[in-house]
Length: 518
Picture 1 (cartoon, one colour):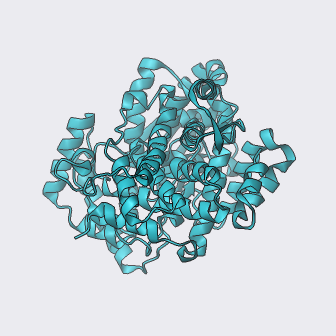
Picture 2 (cartoon, one colour):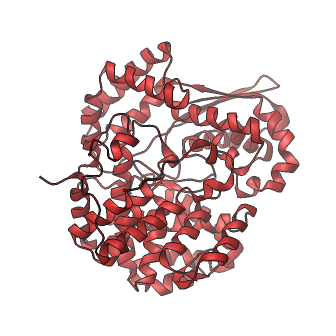
Picture 3 (cartoon, rainbow, N blue to C red):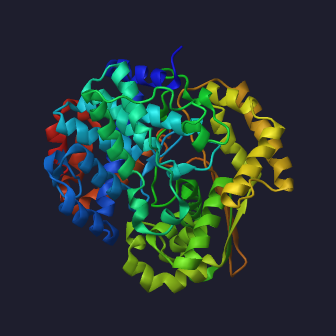
């Protein structure tokens, strides 16, 4: 009987470009464009100086391009640099479930260029990486890490993409994944929520994943049962493993669930920012007129904010801290009238820090269990997800709450919230099961914003799905706006042409695509 790793590897080895649905290929190109935009945005940031300087000290020349500088290194080093740049301002994207983007795009790009592959090969590798990395994250959903702190997925994404581009068979791909996961990364909050060490969260595992595939090609072996072994991956990275989440390969395409950020910051917060901007658009106001703001949000967003606020109190404002504190992010958006990479510059924060803190004191972040239930309903969009939810009983929830409390000093739900959450989750799951299954998964992270002004006016807006979601009709326009705003300072009037080249990647040589970005 094959192991879970062997089944994942077989999918990678056997997948052909022609078998990928057209919209999944298109989503991969959207992801490629979005991550290039994220790199260009960060290329102007002070925090990335250390990346450039360090790479000059240890990375030998090679054939793979660092987008921000045009320098060329070996594939692992080029991917490391690109991933670090793309992580700098939290301006990335997600698929169901995980921020696979850094390694899916930049491991694929670096190895494809190094190995002289085609743009079609590049797109296929990006899809492979998303499908494997997203499922590995989902299998560990109920565990000690969440969101971007699932840094281990970049080991699998990079190993899968590299194996595909190297043409490894299923056996060697199994070994590549096994080697990559033999020493998986475990992100620690103190190094993630304030300091710039967070920039390496995807970079170092992506480089290791690339190396793992090259080692496998050379004959090194990995343990094929590394996920399910009693002393293996899930034992350390999951409180309750969900192996069913690895299923439906080739049936449900996680790449189609892509959602890119239109604001730098945590993905859980994106709809709150959109809600506030919609209020401002229909009923303009000045920051000095704001009396109070209440953001009703999901448990994920509330906990991210709680964790970040704890470290901000100790270490002060930083671009990374702003990204993970919903109250601070909203305060920047209220004070500046926008939330862009410019507002994450340390000089801007130093000049406006007092005003931002004063505004943040007027922002209340509260959990609404019914909004969290919408996230649970997202899990139900896959049959594997529905099966996993049905297998979780009351005792499991109690045990999970205890584990979270022990791990993070975190209250999963209060007794009062538990009742509301359970009812809302059951209703959402029931409604989902009555609807038609659709392989295009939509990722809701809802927020409801209530704005109160000093003149007594009150405005309320709720947004459930981020405007950068691939499934939404206006997402192409949102991406074009993001790409041109972030790429134009480097590419000038050629930014629009560069985006068109990325969207039509298969019609161009990979060298021509990269040339358009220089």
